[in-house]
Image 1 (cartoon, one colour):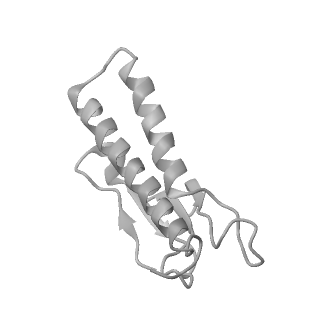
Image 2 (spheres, rainbow, N blue to C red):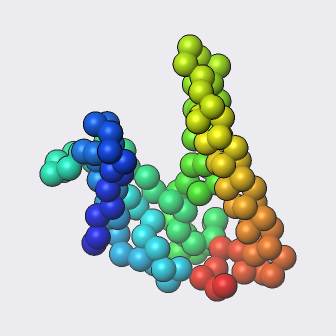
Image 3 (spheres, rainbow, N blue to C red):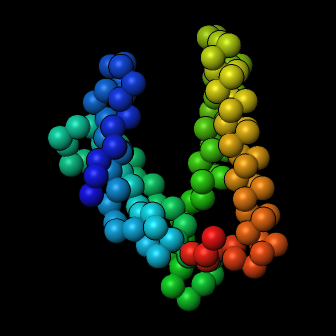
Length: 121
């Protein structure tokens, strides 16, 4: 599988890889990822995304994009209340809130069309 780098020209992220650990499902995307340091097998984090509709017969429980974005917003809001708030962090929170809103809109639309949790457009 193709590895994706978290590289953004800083020491912390330059050494990280985002590695898909399973084959894409019928929806077209992997559901298990690990984040690790380059060339190390021990993961810093493992993320299991929801695979299939919740409580479905072939469902694999995991987190949603919505929950990961909400987690990032919470952590950044905590940083903003700390000793080093910044304009960039405020903007990042705003963009993540926009992404969260799009996740909600997408889910509502898919629910209204009866395809939420299915590999249909």
